Length: 107
Image (cartoon, rainbow, N blue to C red; front, top):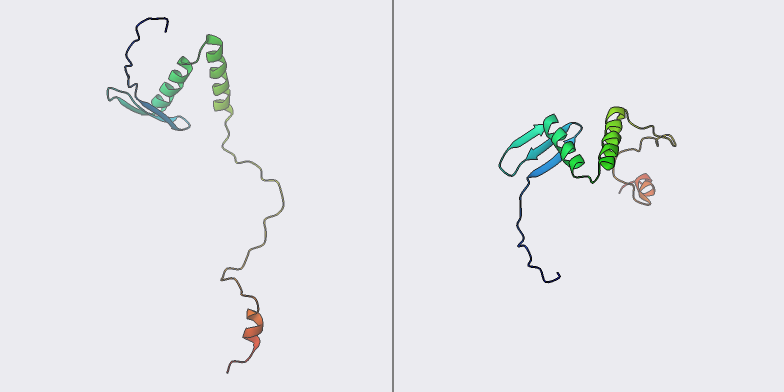
């Protein structure tokens, strides 16, 4: 662009990070360091906050994530609706006319 020389592309492996659950993650850095558990989860959180643009976005995301972490409940949701259907008998489905055939005497 504009006649300037280009820089060759150079790939830098930063490693791998993944959250597994609440306060649980795995981190494998490029030079081989492996971390898991709460420390890896905090590293994942810090890295993702670091890459947000602007201090206001970082603070907003940190407050939002903190609130969600603190009020997260273990209880299940309430199921609203009709009562569950009655138990369905187990067995092969009846074929049409099977009841009439079974009532006839066999030869």
